Length: 256
Image (tube, rainbow, N blue to C red):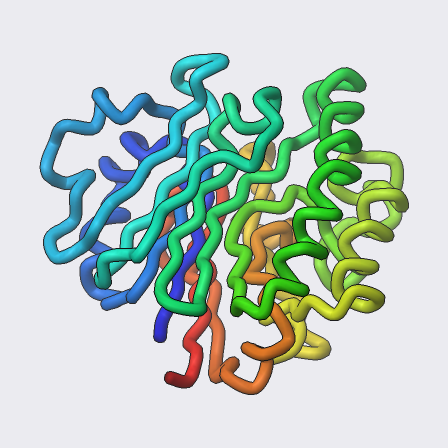
């Protein structure tokens, strides 16, 4: 089973850069997109319904052309969920879940706090509110793959400029502690770090300067999975040869 996660930074923009041609070659079972930045009625072109895939979008309703998540699946899901029960979060289009038997694949877009304190405080509220939901999922007996842009690095291995970013959103001690506790204390599995214990690969680069060319990046895109899937992790990759977005696609292959 192959799952790909990508923050598209605008699905229409990524389409002009060849993302759908690339996805067609990957033969993924499930693709999770974040930051689609479009309303579904703006995606009438057939390219936004890739051949052979069942496509589901959850747009932002609070602000058009903002946020948004999507899932493309080869197999038709048994059920698709798009709300977690808090309007302030749900209306920003940050969650969609596809269920296939006992497996749930989630496309999740955790807010960024980089635009200012108001959004940082909202990010902290989301972190506190969603933690019990993660705990409930883990106890449910279902297998979960939480794909997405979490807007948080875990450690010095996940960011090029560690020291200079200690007071910046995405690398704040409180954020890192929350995400590390999810893995280290609550038993969720960081697929990349499990497969690459000492890896120093990034999934996002600022558009400023020559960050991407100089590999001054952050690893903020994850596939976080329930413990039962840990032994099924086979390999993962971050694709950088083409630039569809300021993020790179993150692919994980799971044993069937």
